Amino acid sequence: MTDIIRLTAADTAAKIASGELTAVEVTEAHLARIEAVDEKVHAFLHVDREGALAQARAVDEKRAKGEKLGPLAGVPLALKDIFTTEGVPTTVGSKILEGWIPPYDATVTKRLKAADVVILGKTNMDEFAMGSSTENSAYGPTGNPWDLTRIPGGSGGGSSAALAAYEAPLAIGTDTGGSIRQPAAVTGTVGVKPTYGGVSRYGMVAFSSSLDQGGPCARTVLDAALLHEVIAGHDPLDSTSIDAPVPPVVEAARNGSVQGMRVGVVKQFRGEGYQAGVVQRFDESVELLKSLGAEIVELDCPTFDLALSAYYLIAPSECSSNLARFDAMRYGLRVGDDGTHSAEEVTALTREAGFGDEVKRRIILGTYALSSGYYDAYYGSAQKVRTLITREFEAAFEDVDVIVSPTTPTTAFPIGERADDPMAMYLADLCTIPTNLAGNAAMSLPCGLAPEDGLPVGLQIIAPAMKDDRLYKVGAAVEAAFVEKWGHPLLEEAPSL
Image (cartoon, rainbow, N blue to C red):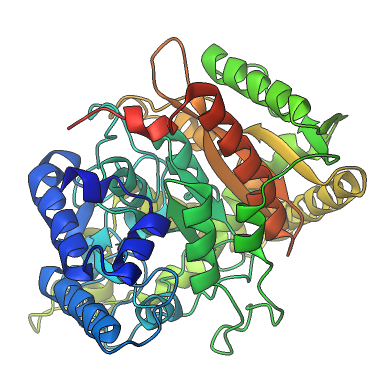
């Protein structure tokens, strides 16, 4: 079992295709791993054992019949509990949807099934994707497999923890302000936020519609590229989906190189509040890129300092609109419906019981920002700042091919340390938010361990919209250089559970 769960997704798929392993053997190995360690990690909210084994058997039957298998056929995956999955609970980490069984699949779910990827279950997350630690989950926090007393990132901490704990070789996350990349950074895994509109949002429960983006999570750059190719592409069911070919991400991941590329380093992504070990590993990564043939270009992007403020007006405003649908009348929790309360009272009682503190905080903030007399001063001003940030990215990408930065200012912080300080929690997304506001593509991959605490540090790579292949080209080159330098993949040294 140990050998199977430590394989890459690409190697697993190859062994299944050749008959060296069966999809059922692989699935059973990962289900056994979940059973052995998830009580401590709490990466999963729901494990679909029977469904996963049925999918695995179908893959083995296809192979036995001589049918051609896709590049990830039979490979297990952990799915963030924000994507609707027919017949499987989807809670979005909230009590308000506890027990809800969707009658349909999200487009991402549908594409995974069509590619014969085996969905193991649904992973823990901050409620409605609002948070940076999974501590806002109504079902309790997830632990970081590197140190179970620390956060695994958020909102997709369950997906990243499942990877780092070897409970699954692949996972899906969503990224509204960094919720794929930040968990990847603090767990030593790879996470990609595709170009906005590159992956369908149909069936993905909405938080902030102009920012939300689903994407691949994995332990290697190539695995992330293979998964990216499966879930990406135009979807007529999503009005924001880009009708254009998927960038050649797999080809880029197989041919990583930075030779002759211009790599930008933004001066705003360092300074006060950044952990010394994070800055040290980032500086080493920049030197590594230089040694691999990249030209380093210093960039000054002053509007990036305003990104956090703009985000925390735009995202809550959109969430206050999107979450209005949870009114106790259609699906999910219903409180007070005993014949003595009006419909309005039932709605109020249900929201009081069903939403957590962070969700309530953002709904109130967003409703205020959109209210008459304040719309232009707050929401309107934030959108103007968003335009300035987008223009600054466009100007920067006229000079450089990609931009690099630390993914997070610090390594994983202890569970509970920032629970009562929302502003400190929000600062975890300082480096990731500008990309969401502009709609660009970005990746986080491991760049070593911080010397002061021995915890993973993430390197963020940012590319222009619809140039997602550049992330994989640079990421694969960096990853290969790390492997060559240390003689083994970084995650082989992840702590045992």
